[in-house]
Image: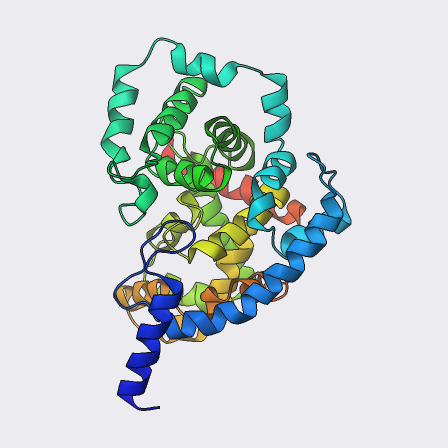
Length: 346
């Protein structure tokens, strides 16, 4: 295909697809519309099949019970129209909402911490500048809802308050649930139970899991571990954003949402499966790097391209390419790494 023909097809695809994705994110100037259209022609067929299966499974129910079948369904992707229901139920957020009626509204009306509010307001306009739903000029701007969710959570959990990165998480939750109270309780599930100590001032949980990833790489991809060591690359330098933002703005939106489907159902070990899959797929490139900048460049490149764009195939791989990853193994590694970090910081 010559250059002119490709440009024409790209223009035609852009007109069909539009310059804004289904979640409100503007596509970049170098976005490959033709490749995306080809990809979606396959993925939409998958989504249609999954949607039919989910409708039969749920049968209009507003509750689901965790079981082997549901786990398999979640791993294969939750249709967007059912995401809020599945996330709320699987994470325990719905139970918390039911047992604490009115708490969210009461948090919004309690005495405000001016320092907390100022910190939140500072980050509001930095939240997804490329998303039309987070602009003051938008007809249905989510900025006010984002502010409410963050300040309510900050007062609900004063040990955390507000930490950079939480605005992006709350923003994604609002895009899916379209509901402040549900987004609040999903944040509570993530920060309070699924990822404890990730967003506290010392971030011990986050630091621990970055070190745990290093230990897992040492066991599963020793050549990569040796390259990191030889080039003095700290894991926090290359993966902290992966963990603290839960892959937001790191991987494509649809892939992130597929990861979150499993994160709310299976817990934090999904983050390790994603990270290990990315590293495993690019281990040859990492091992040929000869300097710290080279290693960092590989880690930037590994989160782009067809491998991560094809979200359905990517999610299948995170459960096959990384091998077994038991909770017992993670618990032992976390205990070891946390003790080491605590000793170093004392």
